[in-house]
Every structure is written in C-alpha cells, then in structure tokens.
Amino acid sequence: MARDGNGDAENLTNKLLIVEYEQVKEEQRARIGFRDNLLYATLASMAAIITFSFQNGGQPELLLLLPPASVVLGWAYLVNDEKISAIGRYVRGDLGPRLAALAPGSSRVFGWETAHRDDHRRVSRKRLQLAADLLLFSVAPMAALIVCWSSEPLPPWLLAVSVAEVALVAVVTVEIVRYADLHRP
Image (spheres, helix red, strand yellow):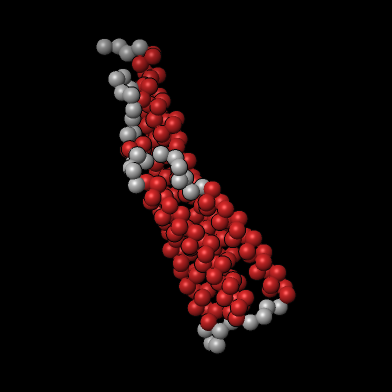
C-alpha cells in the first residue's frame, strides 16, 4: 500500500517530536544530577572553609570565604533548578500538546509531566525545599559573617568586603524565593 506525502510528513513530525522529547528529558536528567551534586559541593566547601578557619589557633576572618562560595554555588544551583523547571513547562505546555494533536484519539501525552504536580502535598514539599535552600545558601553564609564580625575587629577593608558579601547573599536569597514555585500546580 502506497503512503501519501502527508502520512510521511506526519510520521516524520511525530518522530522528530519524540526525539526532541528524549533530548530535553536527557538534558533535564543531567541538570537534575548536577543540581543535586551542587548541594553536596556546597556542604563540602563550607566544611572545608570552617575547618580551615579554625585550625591552628583559628583565623575567623577566613570565614569571609564562605559567603562567596555559597553565592557562586547557590547561583549555579538556582540556574539549573530553573532550567529543569523550564524543561518541564516546555514539555507540558508546548511539546506534549503538539504530540497530542498528532495522536488520533489522544487528548494528552506524557501524563506524568502533569500528574506529579497535582499531588496535594506539592506546595508543602516546595516550602520545605525553599527552607532548605535558604538555610544552605543564605542562613549559613550570614552565620559565618556574624561569627567573623563577633570574633575580633576586622580591618576596614575586610569589613567592606563583608558588607559586599551581605549584599550578594541578599541577592541570591531574593532570587531563591522568587523562583521557589510555591503557587503553581
């Protein structure tokens, strides 16, 4: 039986959309792994900085290294988390509906992409994740600054550095809260 040109084009479109789905899901998986490893990298860098700061009689001013490490790793975490969410939105809002339109009798494809977001505990989990993110990327660096400020008087240039670090931590904190995705189903 000969196929018409429309059937071939439709088949090719379906295959291309499925390949695109596989590619974006692979990117999402890779980003999830990288993002999750950033949490461990942040904890390890914090432990190293704290240990180094208090070795051999202690140099609390070395705690000023903790906020920049937290900001850099926190920003990388946030950017990857947003890209992971953006991929999910793209699959749910664009790619899935295009494939559903090509599949006769199917109103929805990739059901998991929306089903896992319908859990009634999702918002509470997102709030707990926000609290954990803020603890790691905001509270811990601020605590390091407070310890540094209270341990001994800092030279003016280090005090200025620490104030700049407060501003950096504040920026990351605001962005973490902005991207928390607490209200979307």
